[in-house]
Amino acid sequence: MDREALARLTVAGMRRTLARTRTNAAWARRLGDVHPDDIEEPDDWQRLPLLTKDDLRDAYPFGLACAPEAGYRRVHMSSGTTGNPILNPYTATDIAQWGEIMARCYVAAGVTPADVIQITPSFGLFTGGFGFHYGAERLGAMVIPVGAGRTSLQLKLMRDLEATVVTAIATYPLRLMEVAREERFDLGSLSLRIGIFGSEMWSDGLRARIERGLGIRTYDIIGMTETGGPGLGIDCEARAGIHVWEDHYVVEIVDPLTGTPVPDGTEGELVVSTLTREGLPLIRYRTHDLTRVVSRAPCACGRAMLRLDRLRGRTDDMVILKGVNFYPRQIETIVLRQPGVGHEYQVVLESDAGGDRLTLVVETEPGCDPALGARIRHDVHDAIALSPEVRLCAIGSLERPQGKAVRVVDRRRP
Ligand code: ZN
Image 1 (tube, protein in one colour):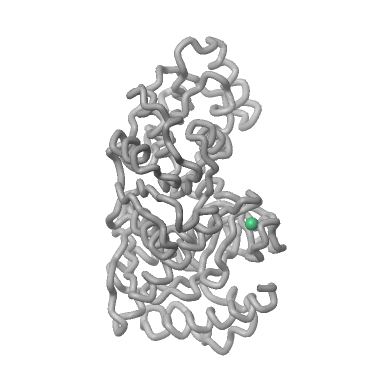
Image 2 (cartoon, helix red, strand yellow; image 1 turned 90 degrees about the vertical axis):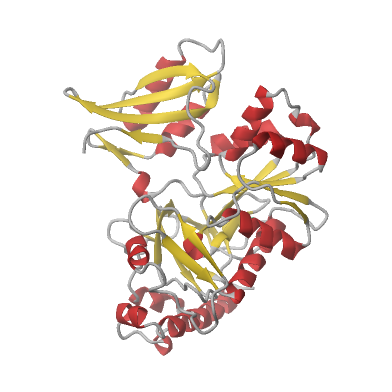
């Protein structure tokens, strides 16, 4: 589809979403006097106010839900750390939409109905498990729905049932590799060829390690509970950015401080609107994810839908220490490129009478170069002008959480 035809589809979707949300009194108050007919071109969307995570939390449970007549079939929840959780109620149409976009993601990653897909994210309120499941059903592939944890069993089933595709939270493949090493499980006995990972930031360095360790090609999938789960977009064989399914979603990049849209190519906060969701439509939702528009030109893979850069972190991940701002991904990039380093590390922030201190705890392989700590300190200073204390420890020293990895521990006094 050319961009002109896509723009017409976008405007029709925007009008539909606006009409739907205006049936809810709380939404109508937020949206003021902007009505569906006022949207004549995609840029008119910028007249509408941005929606925040707090707006969704404050609407708990269903204050901004828009399909009481159609009826809800399912609810998923986003795990926040403070206040009410964010709930997303799905209609039957929403569940079908999810299957559709997830099937597209599989196809973009080269998955076919002949593949065997092992699903390792949990099936429950978290959207990961079910999203990968619906997409696989829609595609017609065989599913091994193991869900979260049970890593030894994951490896056994993966080998014995000849799984060719693994789907996971981005750092879980590291756990698979680690347990394989502990149990002397031969990763070469697996039939895996594709990994589809997302839900947390993973640097290019981590990606290279996973691809090497598992002997697979990986694909980066994005999406969150609020947008209807994973499936908002995925990168393709060309590895030239993450395609967003623009017939279902509109993405904008805004300055995280002012909320003003920034030009293509400039990094900022990802803002998502939905065009086809019913239960919880989104209008200009601030995701806190940092990225940029890479290109709106057709991709080498043949797809015309715009491409975003891989997510580089979140606005709320930004660490401020001694007046210096940095993101954990900057540290990860430096740490993982050193030989002899394991894949677990932690950024620890502490304060005492002498002021704030930055410590990097880095797991290393036995017999690694003792000068490694000094080299990391030097490289970090070059990159962000801070000189951390680097503590090297044996592989397995840092705790392995069940879900997402804990990369920053802030023990500073408030
Ligand atoms: Zn592409």
